[in-house]
Image 1 (spheres, chains in turn green, brown):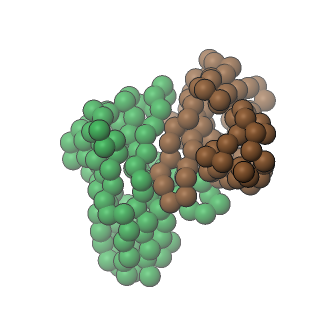
Image 2 (tube, chains in turn cyan, brown):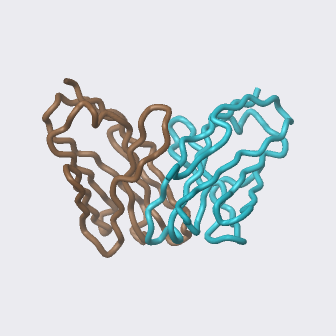
Length: 114
Length: 111
């Protein structure tokens, strides 16, 4: 099992460009999450999908959109990138919603917006 | 809003010493608390998850305790090894289901 995979691993964008970060899991998990990690600030939740067909805002959703394409895949879209979105983005999944189950993380996407 | 704090931000110990990592949270109404390990340039690996009804969890050399009333969790790593060098993060799950992370403690175990 590959676990949680993310593409791309690295990306450089110019301000105003758009892109989609892809995430897939092969563990048959129901719930998926997107986080960003910034130095000294820990991880912050952007969006989550408790189950296929549902998505909800997290702590810092502004400037992002998500799509739960199917049970396996959960994508994060930046419509008009800004330098403040320079960060490391992590996708995670859990068997059920997070109250009981531990989360499994992907390797991350390092995004720089110039 | 749940605030999670980890002190110290960095720790350096000689091999064989026991490690004690601290995590504090402001809202005691949590569903669970989870400890993660992060290696440089990598994602997070879950170490232990403690449900709100539990007082501790153990896995091998790792033991984590939870005291909701005081808003504290402690991760103990026995007989540390150089391979334990990493950043350790704790995360508390409050009533709004939005997992709140601390900034982490970076551990260096010297051979």
